[in-house]
Length: 229
Image (cartoon, rainbow, N blue to C red; front, side, top):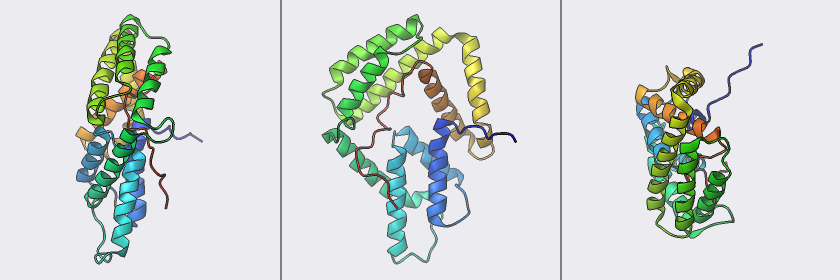
């Protein structure tokens, strides 16, 4: 019996949103192209998966007891307002600082440690990692969340470029083929633009993971309440 290929970690975000929305909606229809673009918007904005699912839950719970409950929810866009509200609560919690390890400042200090113990970096990657770690130390205790998020994205791009240069053309082709294989199942299900973004995200994650470095993003932090049914 052939084992199923592992789900790509970036693709898992999109798949989890689809499965949760479809199961809560109680309708076998899958996401439309417009829905996929909305999920892409949430992912590009760095909205954590649990925050998205919490917003979907809140929207569909409200629908279930509202005047329009007999009318089915056809589009994920119905949940967009509640997802945005959940995101704003998450950002406030990060800015204020929650439990140990869930504040933005704690995350930045964690990135410093990750970069300093990165393994197997080439010369350009080592130099870029050291520069980012130095700058992160200065930013760890200050700055608006939106500014930090944009700054992290730019620094990650610089690090990825340096690592890619060290890897060389052959290594980059090999990694791209690995990603394309992992995403093959999504080619007929997602619009090309969404799949292209997913491919770039997956390449970035895999390049960094080779060296024990996480994505330089706050989207995995969730200091709020857990998702509950």
